[in-house]
Length: 219
Image (tube, rainbow, N blue to C red):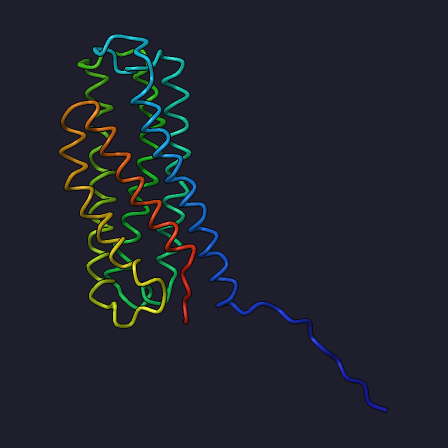
């Protein structure tokens, strides 16, 4: 008499990875849309303090709450970039992998800086504390932009091998370019221009998240 045994069916690593990638895309999409809302809220917020205060237009208490929300909002964006780094096309390119890693580190550091910026809640805009916090944004933003730019160029050059959403390589490139033109000049300009620039970047991240959520990786 013989007996047969069966092993339960399990999801293949590729299927599991695909589900995670699409979930990361949805998280990225939701966080990016939240970022658009945050930019709009700041622009429409009534002036509670004078514009020479670092917390402008918020009171210190509202400023702390806003900064905490910014920090949390950045993390799902990093999750989306990490998920893209795990796709077949990105893994096949060393430049794309390194670029996406740099962008991920930049976004995480940006979240950290948002928390550190809480220390300027009671500071004047032109104080040493205010200047220190403002300058601390430069490295994370430029690291994110440079990483996305490098990864975008690498992915666009390998687009013939791309098996997922055809827009993704171009969106990564656009996200990187946007940091340098127009985001950086906008942030260096007026308060309104800076918020509009950030809101536009988040809109682009939303499109990226949506494309990632539809990604179909053949690897």
